[in-house]
Image (cartoon, rainbow, N blue to C red; front, side, top):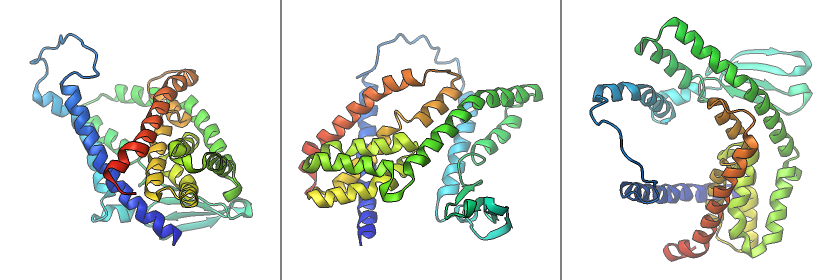
Length: 310
């Protein structure tokens, strides 16, 4: 019953968030066209400097990425089901390490790790890594006629940039999994319930920040929703606050937390070749995150009741 209520509310929230997101996009475009909130700069660009063909060619890799993602995520097409096919294709025992399996959809799984109920899996084709990024790169190389020496340099520099962040990300993921251990008694759950007990009926003000904590630790809005969704639902039902409103704030908070998520910051720093600036970046990004949370709380308290009877 509770899970069904959660799913129904989540579906309604996705529709509502999409609607308001579209409205926000139109407002942002309207404001940008009128230079509202933009710094005034002198346009020194020659409008005839770049041809339409060159622009289309430059956008080809991005368009290919988008096309791959759309095609492999649409339920009506067969590709998503093929990439998530869990039918066992190969299986072998790795002793005390566990049971190693490969499915027809190239899902690599390790089950019953060290004799426990812990399992882990990786969807080689569905996780956005090999497809679409690596495939797009392999297609773009002959399309742009890149020489073999430049290809070698690109791959070498990319591997060099990702070496140090890889070590940092492994440590961060270990910390995330450690904080999630224990189910209802895990550190993350205890933090969430403590916040809920302290705030009581004023939970609407702090709900988005709990979602932010979840994505801060995990780097994923989805994981944040899975981790704290039940806590938010329980708190809303206990305090009498609208379940739909609280779950919406949870999802908003999950997006907020990505601003300060160490996983994301390390990943971006590696792409931009920035070293040892994670602390500085978090100090700057935490300010808009807090402002974001305050705006979400104000909207929940004053704006949403004007349009919805929750």
